[in-house]
Length: 197
Image (cartoon, rainbow, N blue to C red):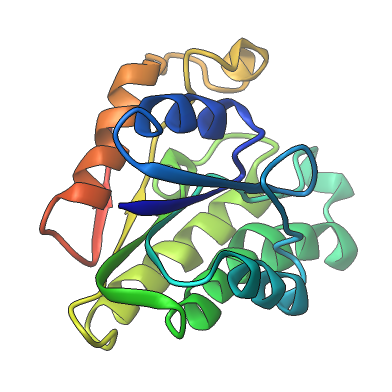
């Protein structure tokens, strides 16, 4: 399979690239340092990425900038970081990508436990996650040619200890659990699902 991993320079993206490139052709994409450069806050940049890559079988997104910070500092400007990044960025990966993906291909987006288990400082991410999960369920009933779409929704991951203090009492998701959540989404038969590794 030809798999695009968007956000491949990040913690999750690097792990998934290493895991999947042993078995498949992996095209890495991020704002810098990857096979293809992409800014997911720009529809034009996303279109250019797909034109460079050409037809593909699966897209994985681990990208999604949001505002992290105290509620009192949350304004329209800060809130739009999550709207334009994690929400519209990932939605546009699908809206534009549906014209390039091969029949029976799949999209896998990233959300997170904050959609149903909010924590302080993460209102922006909670809202963006919830919107992406709603989009995944809706897109699943309208995508054509056997194309599937799912989301992977982890809690804090073991390789990001800097976030542990923000998630008191949460057991971190291991990198293997995360990988197998993505494997289920990409190589399984489900669509419209929110997979919680």
